[in-house]
Image (cartoon, each protein chain N blue to C red):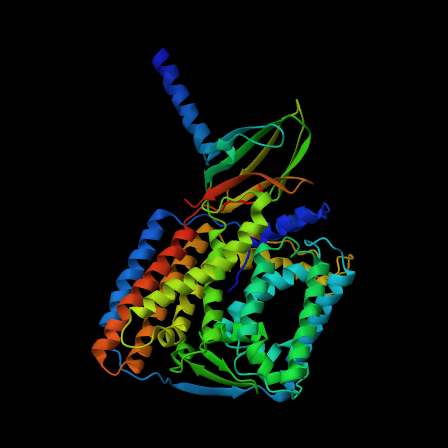
Length: 445
Length: 111
């Protein structure tokens, strides 16, 4: 959830400042990318914090049964023809993106590429996968070729390339001032295509998708929360939300780190909008780079420490088993942070779809759509945040509890293992709420 | 009949308030070197209020209030007013046109 943006929009603002490409557009174009969030009021903060803690005890008191398997119901199978058609649309959008970036206007506010990539896809598609399952496995445009590979991917490499690429992607999203320039987005997409296809050709499509295609790994983890399980062949199964986190097999070390980076970059993105993060423009890039790298290290250390307190198993194994259970809180905080932004600023995709290159076209008749800033208000944003965070917190506790019962043979040691983890989750939830209660600070003032 | 006059004045005042419906919230904002005093970087109002931002400046500027999408042209000796009813809640920047610099934020809190 690198979810990003000092206000994505002020990310855009900063970018356009940096490149001096602002063209006075129409008033409607102005609303692009602005965040209109008010800090969470103290009363709601207290209510949310109290609810999270109280419901934690409810989870503890629940008589849970061991067993990490879950029921699922097969829904239907998307016909292969439809899967093919969906992927063709996805590839088509990818081409539009490249064309808009290379040949369209370089004003980020009037070009399809920045709004689509940073708002509709990176934020919106994350939520789609959290609700409808791993749609990326169906839509991934790079999967149009499926080479067998020339070499065996060394086991030691695992998902490390994905970890490195996620950090790089987060740096581009959060730190890099040129991230909204359409041409930069197009060149990055082309470069990433080259990298992905090279990896696929060398090591085989399936191996590289698991170890080096960062978005496959990312959306795959997000989709573990979804009540729908999507298989690559288009089969759909219904299951309880979050059931995908009940996999009793620990993830690999790089995958655990991948999840920790996911958690850390969401938190870092929120933190840098708070008054705590008062960095002058001159030092912004260096400070943000250091912060972006330091945050996952701090998270990893804290989580490792917690796992060391959990009981008679190696901390490393417990970390690999339990780290994915933190995902519901991270996603909840992500929703709290970005949902209203997505609903308001995301509307900019509607006019831009009709005029992706900024040439005055009106392909779908939506080019003159004006953003409705009033679609959600402060109250909606506040209550959505509180509901999301409390629900995410409870789901995380519940899943961790179930996993502990499967991992530790005795009920007592299972329960004891959960005290440190519950403390960690309460702390993480409080941190996320605290960030929401802070006034947003413009770093580019 | 001072008492009658006072009574009449009170009734008139009450009528005026009733006609105005929403309370009026005005801010006098003096822009100097494209900045406002630190205390005015964030202006707070409540949903439903009528808000007036009364601008004065030391150089000609076009100001744009996001979300509400209202523009105001202000110049030295020619003050301008951005007036609106606070229907949208949230945090809305006022930008100086063509500079992409945020002058201040208007925060409208729910009732």
